[in-house]
Image (tube, rainbow, N blue to C red; front, side, top):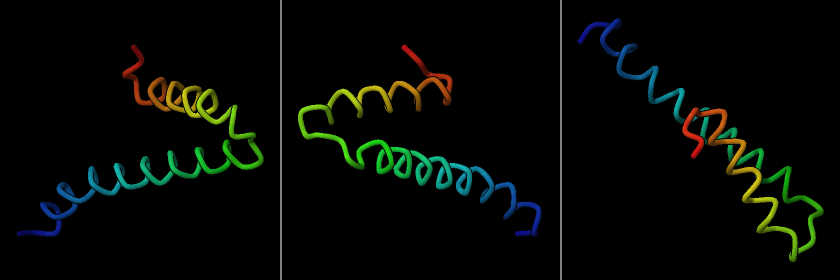
Length: 58
């Protein structure tokens, strides 16, 4: 395989990893200092934001 072929294969994988790491970081920041009774609401809101950014909002 050439360098261009490797790059074409790895760029989508790298972007997915960056998106996943960003989602985890957003969740960690959002849950920090949140009361346990409010965590479900916060997680639901974060999931909605992530879906909206990805373009798959239902």
